[in-house]
Image (cartoon, rainbow, N blue to C red; front, side, top):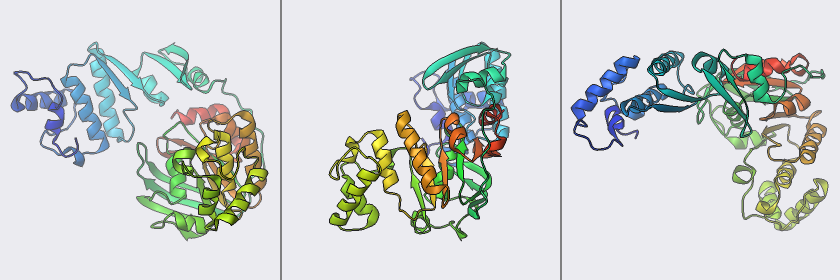
Length: 393
């Protein structure tokens, strides 16, 4: 409860008990804080605390309830290195006291430092279990469903002018922000943003589309600074963004194909109907101009989104463009994008499938914990190294 104090949040939810007086709870909070070397004060207001300090309070709440099993979901996301060190020390301390810790993390360094046993899940399925000491290449194989080998063919590097530039960009995200991100993307490139979910790729795309604003640094598109500008500026300069959630963010449920072309083109219904009919034929959309978009399959929704991109677009930003598509639809999407934009524009995309990225990208930016940790032309990519970098190893 952000408006309440640390002590109020520590107490809330406890069953009534003779020892649940505020004075006793304050002593209990102080004892637990000293025990695990946290520095929290009961009269501080929660909304003024950092993410790491709030994480510490949640941890103390569990200890205050004498929890025997602690389930921690990505507990180091958004906290400082010093706070991470203190959290690790506290976890090791209570583990040695005989409590059980279930840690959910994609950071192999944390797994190796804290865990005695690991269960690896991929696409909702258990792919294997290993006991400490862990063999990292084996964990990577279980995570990515194949032996980490290099199978990437070289492709020519783009020689076009700089189109999109990030200079020392920092920004807040829902869970993971961006930290000191710098890169230059050139005309004619297909750039893949690799990383496990929530590592910063989605925020990067939204910053490039001017749907989010940075805290620090400068973003330039076609030489125009985007700081303080909105998505209309990006559209005017030839940029467009296609989100992963097609129906929730990209399309409007209850609207027909004609409705969408009317909005996209700012034209009359008759003109939009002609455009919709032409798009159905060109993009092989299984529907009619009057079909409601929610009745289309995922593949046909993606084809519609591609059809709505203006013909003069020169920067296409795509978030997981083939998620949920069958193989034939995914192949068609990439065939279309490469034929349309490889010579006159630039494609920047994120994907949960590293294999897809290695197949279609000319260059890969690897994200981990809000940072670009590797920037590799496809000819220099080693599958094993990219997979390791995605997990912080």
